[in-house]
Structures are given as C-alpha cells and as structure tokens.
Image (tube, rainbow over all chains, first blue to last red):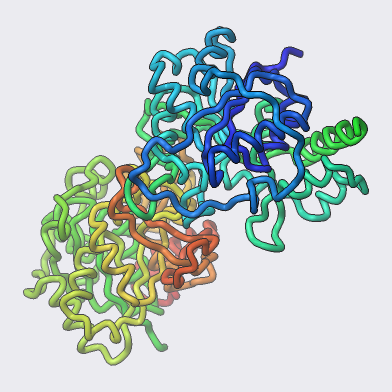
Length: 307
Length: 317
C-alpha cells in the first residue's frame, strides 16, 4: 500500500518522539519542521527534535521554523511541559542536521512535489503552517489536509475549555482553519477517550526495559496524577495511517481568539448549523483500542529488537 | 402537601407554553405568578402569549407582569424563525380576559419575594433580563430566593444562538453574567440535556388523544418541530419544560456541579456558558448543570399533566 506523504510539524516535546516513531512505520515522512511552540526556548525544540529523528532512525528533511507565536503582544497561558527540558531529561543521541530551508518554505516545497497529496501533521501549535499560508496564500489549495493534535470537542486542559496547543498560538490556528484546508482534529477529548491505563501500558511494554521502552513510558502525559496516560501525536499518526480504526464526525469549527475565557477555544458548531455552512473539520471521536495498542506494541517491539 | 412556591419568568415561546402547562398542573408547585421577558419574540408578543396560555389552561388566577422591553445592554434579538411572527404560531389562543399586573416584572417579582414566607424558586426560561435587574435593584431579597432553576446555556451540547452560545443566554449575556455571579444557587438545564429531552414526532398523537390541552401541546410541537424535522431530528426538544420538570422530579436528570462563567468577550463565544467540567481552573462550583435526562419519563410527565386538565382536578403530581 502506498504510504501517505506527510510533513510533520512539532515543537519538540517528548510525546512527539512517539508520533515520529509511529510515523516512520505508517507514513511517508518527507520532512519534519520545528517551531518553538510549547518549548521553553526554540533551541530546545530544535535540539530535541533532531535527537528524536536520530533515535527513531528517520531520515528526511529537517527544518527550523518560527521561534515565536504569530502574536507576541498576547499573553500565553502556562504550558504543561515534559520537564525539565521537554524530554524528561532522557539522553537522546546527537541530533540530525538541519537544512538551511526554513519550515514554511519546506512545507510549500513538499506540497508542490506531492501534487495535492501532501498531509501536514501538526503535533504542536500551528505557527509554521500559518506562516507558510501567510507567505504562500495558494498553499491552501495544494494541501490534501491538515491533521493536528489539539483543540477539544468539549473541555480544555489549560483552562475550562481551552487546550494547550491552541492556547499557545490561537492566531496561527485561526489562519489555518480560515484557509479552507480540510482539517482533521485529534483533540483533548480524544486523548482522554483513548487514554491508556497503567495496566495497558504494562501490557504494551511487556517487560522490556530498553531506551525506547523508557521513552515510551515517560512520553505519556497524565491528565492529573494517578490518571491514565495518553499520547497525542501517536494518536494522530494512528488516525492518519489507519483511519479505518478511528470514528470521525464532521463539524464546522471556528477558532476563538478573543476574550479571557475562550481565547484559543475551538468552537464546534454542532447544532442548528445553518444549512450549507462548510463542515470544515473531521473530528476524531473514538477508536479501536485494540488496534491502537497493537500498533504501539509492534512498533515498540520492533525498535527494541534493533538495540 | 408542602408545595414549592415558584415564580416563572418566560418568553413564550412554544416550549415556554409547555413549561407553563406543566407547572400549573403540578400539585407539587405553587405558581405565585408569571413575568415575561423579551426573547423568543418582542415583549408585547410574549406577554400576550403568556396571557393567552393561562386563559386557554383555565388559569385566570395566575397574575402576569410584563418585563423590560429590551435586554440590559444589547439590542432586541428575537427568534421568529423558530416561534413564528406571534412567538407562538400554530395553535389558536383565546384573547386574554384578565388584565396584566400594574407593576413591572421586576417590581412584581420583588413584591412576591417579600410577601412569601418561604424562600421562592425562580424559574427563568427566557433571557435573564428581569432576574438580573431584580438581583441588582433588590440585593437584600437574595435570601428570599431558594434557588434559580433555569433553562439556558450549554456546556458541550451545542448552540442555538450566534456562534457557540445558547439563545436565552446570548440574547442578554450581561444579565446572565449578573445572575451567574450572584451567589444564588443556580440549577442549569441547558442544551446539553434539553436537546435530548424531546417529544418524538410519533408521540404527538398520544397527546392529541387526551383532549383540548393535549391537542394544544401537539399543535405547539407541530409548529416548533418544523425546523427540527428539516435538520433531520426525530423529535422536538421541549427545552423550557425541563426546568419545571426538574422541580417536579429531579430524578429525571443527572447533574454535575461545576464552575460556569459567561463569556462576554469572544467573537464566536460571546454569550456562551463556559463550564469547567474537569475543574482545571479550581474555581468554586457555582452551578448545578444538567447532563442527561430520562426522556421517556419526561414525556410521561407531560402526558399526565395534560390529562390532569381534562379531569379538571389536580390529582397529578
């Protein structure tokens, strides 16, 4: 089967590592682009992502992107991070080399080459893609879809209704949503729905204790201490690569950028949506747990054998 | 029997009409009066409708007072598209015989609260304009309010106003903010629960069979149902009656207490009720929010209420 050509955009947080490992199995990764996003410093995001690629054995173009959100005049709420360095202090190998081509040019270049088939996968805030759309307005008609980790069908994790990737750069999200590209959302509600319990993680790990297993175990972020673990980027790759195992619903979604309570909220207009309003977003709602767990287990086993 | 004194503040409105029908049939409730708000239609129309409904139900003894002509800070915004030009298109209503109370809705509410020996439950099923004004102008009367059981808002369950908002809150979001921050206990039956609390189209005949009042309900559902049929729903949500049903039998609903704030700034979310389901922000929970309902028992409650009018007695509870 032909793998989908994708560009992965990330902010170098540890959960992206597992997204990258799964993507290597399931997708044709043309390039990885990096933005500061939720990282403390842009340089940290760049360094971490380089290490993730090396450890995952993924060879592709690697581009640096934006070191700031679209607006710097607005306050960004406190982010949850994989402390202390975005990768829980894990020793990743020296990173792959970065191209000189910046993220927005790389995305455009790959979109051109893929002739309408390119999927852009955002593990973090959508800053780089927004900048690409700002620079190349025609890009929106050249991309097959944008799959992103973030937003939420219902409730948030940095505030009552706002999710962290959207909170980190609401204007970027708004620009991408407004561009008319088909969106595919792997939101916080879906992460919670697909959360793995400690017992399930134990099943996947199955007594292994190599570096990949350690990274896997640590890259799950708990909603609250003692609660189940989830892996946002991995979920998105699972949904893109194996869509038959995910149930989607279509909604018309807006991104709210104003107001203290709702800045960064994605608003699904799911009721009384005027007829003819474009349902611009496929929202992942539920998944085949067993297929997801099998994929994680097979991927982990495969990597640990390499050691 | 120890009846719960209630004051209804409404904007009839098809589902308001069913809420009034249900409340005036309930042995458990003592309706001290009805005040009107502008919402589903202009204040003149919603007031005339409230009078017509009470006349049709044979409840001339229920006093009715007219509310403010417009929301506190925003322009009049009505829902003729859902409720018709009269606000209650469909059934034929008799002309009102009993004159309105001389006081304004706010003065009327204040007077009823002052005179009541027991704390009163306020049941708003329209925009919260009158209730907010009451709370601002008569702060000392808060202690006479047992709680506010309202139909309005939505935590997840969609929108019926502009953007992400529900109609009642959207029409007067500033009033909603005043009410939600008042400290008075609030029970919120929003779209999360009311959208699922429907009369199914095939159930309309069960109402018609009962007689005059059942037919009235069926005709309300006929008209109000057009829009829902068009978007593929199998039934008509009886939003406002949920607030009354909650008072009659709270076990019909599952509820969760959480912090709810009114968004007054968003471009798309202005007027939305922001509920902190997971308590991410750690704020004090101020609202008991309806999450789901037992639809079949709700419809049974409505059917029994209609039947009670035919008997001409209040056996129904």
